[in-house]
Amino acid sequence: MVNRIVVGAHYGLRDWLLQRISAIVMALYSVAFLLCFLPRLPLDFEEWHAWFAHPVGKIATLLFMLSLLLHAWVGVRDIFMDYIKPFGLRFSLQVLVILLLLVYALWAVALLWSI
Amino acid sequence: MKFSIYRYNPEKDDKPYMQDYEVELQHSDRMLLDAILRIKAMDDSLGLRKSCREGVCGSDGMNINGKNGLACITPLKDLKEPVILRPLPGLPVIRDLIVDMSQFFKQYHSIKPYLVNDNPPPQKERLQSPEDREELNGLYECVLCACCSTSCPSFWWNPDKFVGPAALLQAYRFIADTRDDATSERLDNLEDPYRLFRCHTIMNCADVCPKGLNPTEAIGKIKEQMVKRMV
Image 1 (spheres, rainbow over the protein chains, first blue to last red):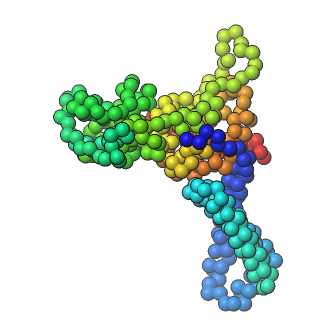
Image 2 (image 1 turned 120 degrees about the horizontal axis):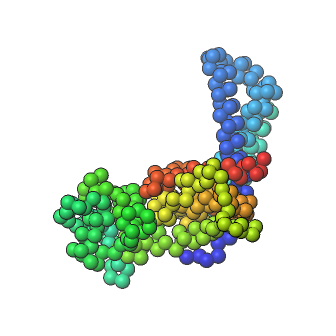
Image 3 (image 1 turned 30 degrees about the vertical axis):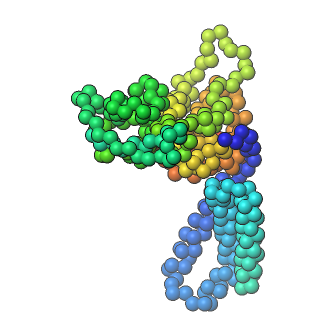
């Protein structure tokens, strides 16, 4: 048994809230997205293009993407905290995931603004 | 009645094994503990903890047919044969059904399970309104049998860092107590990604609690208090 356990990093609540709030954003976006497009199926390329080219569609999609990435970060970090015991490995994996998610974020911005 | 019981004596056995028993029950044998004591009379090498035999002391927590519970308040008639008995999962086995609970109690101590109030005590007692007292129902009844914490995967993976459902229920028992002045310190003590937030709300704890308590709900209320003081 380890006697000296250092705990007390005060960001538990922040991350937990982040996960909940990002989930709400994603749920709202998904519902709005379906409500917008289901009645208009089948969509042609012009309609898709027009939706994503519109600032509202663009910003909503970007918000969704950021929520998705933040949500993924908390979730993946939780899995690492649960199952990956060696500190060095856990730390490296977390850095790797952060970098990957940052790439995804930039990629999403690049995609959305290329429309 | 047929039983299959986990046996392990680290002084003699290389590894744990399951031993089968068949026991003749008497008319008065109602609870699982009665049957185990009949087995113990046949084979006195079987190790287990028990004391009050009425679900108050919390010593005979064990894994019964795959689900944690107290042997003394588990009716025999509800059990499928052969009854498979194992020690509480996730804790080091000392012998047979006896586990080392040090880690569990260490987490319990870490939440300061006592009233903190620096005001001078009044002549008679610190009074509570009936409504304030009501809040403690469903919290104070915990007997610390560890059935909940040892059925929680988060406690299995991080028993040293995650406080576990039993101790978190106790933590909320003092957070909810209007006579306690250390609410803020108690919340600070838990606001850590490991200590409280390893709980992923799978509710195994509420499912197994032999006293019918709901640690998940208490954990939710702790989070609610944290959000309230933040916003």
